[in-house]
Length: 228
Image 1 (cartoon, rainbow, N blue to C red):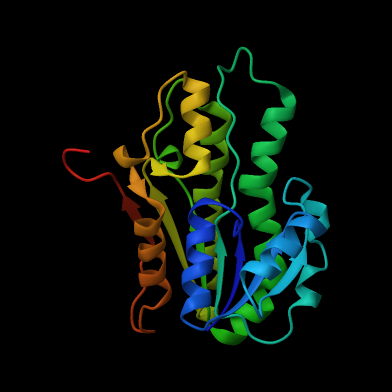
Image 2 (tube, one colour; image 1 turned 180 degrees about the horizontal axis):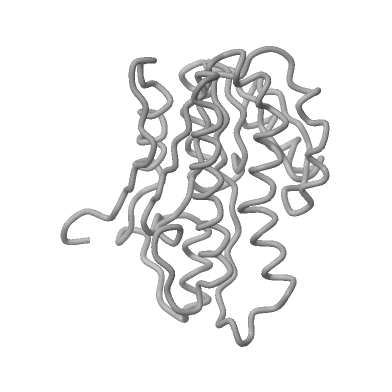
């Protein structure tokens, strides 16, 4: 299987990239800088790494020309979060979250649609519980993730005749560096054992990617288990 993946440097994307590498899949990883690209090349021998800054979606223009041949899956696992009330959230925070979490996935998907259509591939958007319900101080992040849900739904309707499957994955709070940052912003102690492991979410994504062609999963929600 040949996959393009964002967010491979941390959290769910990191775990997913390692599991895909271990089982012998062919990876194309998107790195925000040449320094991060070198790190990913060392961590994932044989992977192709392309440089584009998701915070500046214009850098994705033309990226499709760097990826030759069919693409079996595109997984959008990168994301950023900045909490704060609407009354105080800075313009820069709005712009970064919307760029990385929504606009960049749209542009990257557009760039790779010919390759995805060629393979009758799968697009996976790693969304969030915040893409289903918005809480106080989560406006910027939730807006970007609600938008990502809309993007996925529209893409699914547009590409079904081309055989492209589209799945949104909505993890609840997951033990990642991003979650640790969220706890810091909330002023709470962070205990990774209280939350879903990144391995569990990566396993769910692999299940979606490995589905036979006679089935598709449009949406899947992953929540912490009972007692957690």
